[in-house]
Every structure is written in C-alpha cells, then in structure tokens.
Image 1 (cartoon, rainbow, N blue to C red):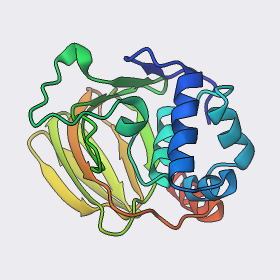
Image 2: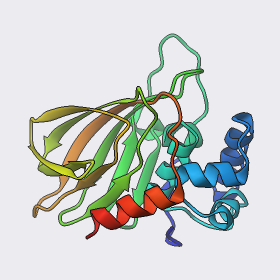
Image 3: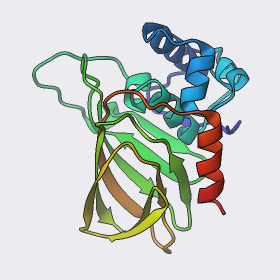
Image 4: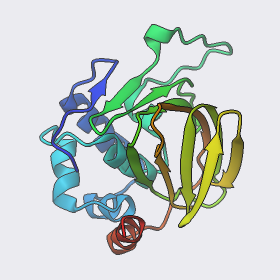
Length: 212
C-alpha cells in the first residue's frame, strides 16, 4: 500500500473510488474479510480504502479489482451500452503510479463484460510489481510496441522486445519490469473470468519470492 497519490484522469477522488469498490463488493455479496483475503490485503487497509482515507497504489488497486473478479477499468469508469463506442484520447482513463509507470485504459466498460485493453508505459529501470492471479479461464495477451519488457509468469522470466507478443493463461502471477535504459511501451488485453481463491499468506509468499 502506498500513501503516495495515484492520479486518475477522470478526476475521481478517493471517496468516490472507495464507494465504487464498496458497492462492487456488496454486489458480489462479499464481506470486508472475504475481499481482503481474495485481494491479499489486510481488512483494515481495505476498510480505509473504501472510506477514502487511504490512497492505493495502482498495483494495490489492481489486487483489489482482481479480488472482485473485475478490472481497474470497471472501478474507474462508467458502463456504456452502445453498439459503437469511440473513446477519444482525452476521454481515456489514465492512472499514473509514483513508481514510474502509466496505465492508459483503451477499452470501455460494457455491461456483463470483464475485459480490459490497456497501453502501459514503464520508465527505465522501473519494476511495476507482481500482479495477482485472475480466475481460472482468464486470458491475457501482451505486445511490446517500444523498448524491452521483462515479463515474469509464475517465476519464469520472458524477455520481450519491440514487435514481440505473448499469450498466457490469466490465472498466474505475473510481473512487469523494464530493466533497460529506455522507456518500454506495451499493450495488454485481459479477459477476466471467475474469481481467484487467494489468501493473504499465498499473496505474501509469492511477493517475497518475486523480490528475493
């Protein structure tokens, strides 16, 4: 958890974000304890986030979204139901993490669909962290536009250069880092299904292993 403020392009404040998380939790009939276990965070931390008293880093926000079986896009954006949706650049949700990376959401939030298409920029020498395993049946695709990406899947590293792409099952632990001296830009498409049966202990174990 980071007390450094992540910036949301929509102007959504932390109270509004916390309320959105709370409503999504209640809609799924999850208690604070249940979601905290799924997200791998403490109950008190999650409670503070829901009340708008704590600012989650982008990574922690992603853990919470994964615990809900959804994406950051749904926590930040409103559902749209038109058959054709154009998102102009200025309309796209952008989250900037103080660690040195940016996540731009390119896909609209659709009713009943848990899908996110994003463009991420990671500055030189930055490790964006380890992202949680999604539910069984989840799918992810990544393609590098510029620079070099080090993608680690369940402890196995893959080095991807500009023009390279990779597919992997989404029910895995995956980390993104840029160990080069130039910015890395990549696209990621994520189709989320189900909900992961995570515990804080499992989460902490994989995090420690990833930083050993």
